[in-house]
Length: 116
Length: 113
Image (cartoon, rainbow over all chains, first blue to last red; front, side, top):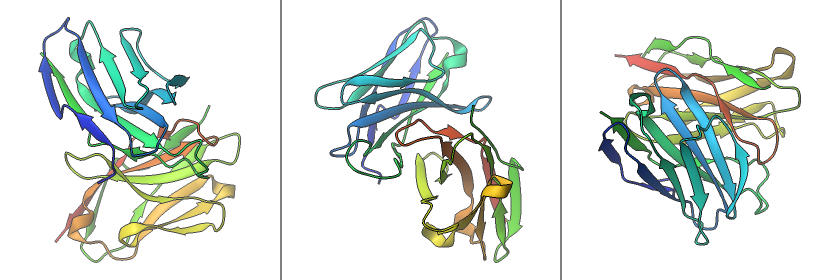
């Protein structure tokens, strides 16, 4: 158990809909990362938050957005969903900024999104 | 821009045989290097990380990796495969502290009885 939790585990929805994925980082971690894993694109970095502020952006679509709340949990919002958005969405957290040296990331179990 | 290649999307070995999973990276600066394992329907678990203290890094479950700067490689090995090693393995690189990871495409390891 990495200490990172994600809900829900599975999500099935229709095209055009909007969903919210939730992530709670390891206790004390200030940095949260979101990744998308699909068969054709592999593991792609979407976005990073650090202590409530966006720190880095990757291949995140404009239809997607994220935020990190004062209690450090994060949410990834996916809107106007398309069939191609079906994927596993992972959240990771790290001790970046807390004195760790290597920024290893600890991954949650993922949310499997199916868009029908 | 950094990138990671993993030669062989699928590797099969017999139980007890040597496991060798290849990872090559491109980076303009000394990178942070990691290997993760993903078991079916699970998240990614850190196997090991390169810390620059030693070029040969030991990880969990008997795995180790060797950093070769001249070859820009960080290959993962295990002397004797076990059935429980069957999983997908990802090499990841980060160009700086706190930077996001770039993952390789992954190598699926099958272990045959």
